[in-house]
Image (cartoon, rainbow, N blue to C red):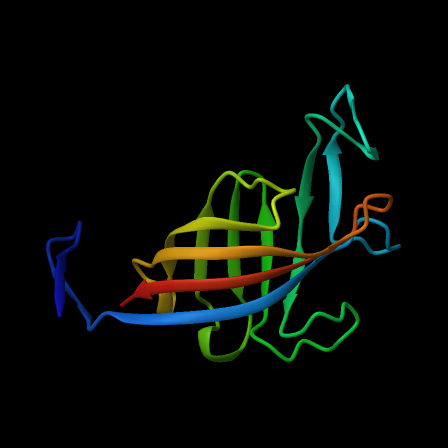
Length: 158
């Protein structure tokens, strides 16, 4: 058991440390009439071999996470949303982890097949979380910019 002193002077008992593995698919859709990602800043130079992308582009995403690879499937896995600029926040909207969050802060080498991203914190059931996420590009359409990504998240928390 861990005891932490709070800013208000009282002790907070956190209980035993636990580990959790979460698995989702994220569908990053730019081409749909209802996209989950939107470019908010267009960088000046074009990227070779990627006609719809510029170096320096900044996009904002609100991608649903699902338990399977099909984009149009119902969410049968843990529901969360990802919103990112330089950080990614997974916000759990229902199920066992409702109201909890996980925060990922990392450089994302987007064209690497699998990336390891550090989990730097969390709230709710993931209070004081630490760990890592493996982000795998399941599919990517270079013309449309649509991507299906697989996330395996491994965290230790209280």
